[in-house]
Image (tube, rainbow, N blue to C red):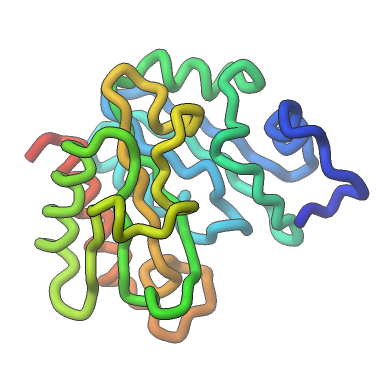
Length: 204
């Protein structure tokens, strides 16, 4: 849903989103490992915070798009075409691989973290790190067949799969993301996700 009175054609959605008042696009080029949060701000709340914290600690590159209060516009990942964004193009040209942080809500999966994306080796490393940092009470799924199809992040046009080494897509439930209003949110949950991302970015 968008505050605009019309829905742009699929090929122009990203350009229209970035031109919308209050939308913030950030690109910070540091290391060759990248962290992304393309649905940050008011849409998938807390994802941009987690990506930014991990990127700063790890010296990783960062690309985020933050939507302002009042805007809830879900531009599909596959519509994030670098042709429409010089910042996204620069990020993808700079990094070797990346992790894209997303948020989701689904019944029965409130304590589950999903690790998709085209680089299954990277996804496996991230899943292992998450299992180590999250502790009990959470399930980490990295078998694609076990992840709901729309959340697998394996489409070739998904920007996290465009770097030379591809990437992994991390889907997080509300309780590990600040700003979602989830009564079960705890800062230590967020910190555990950040720690796992830092370890993966540093290759430790």
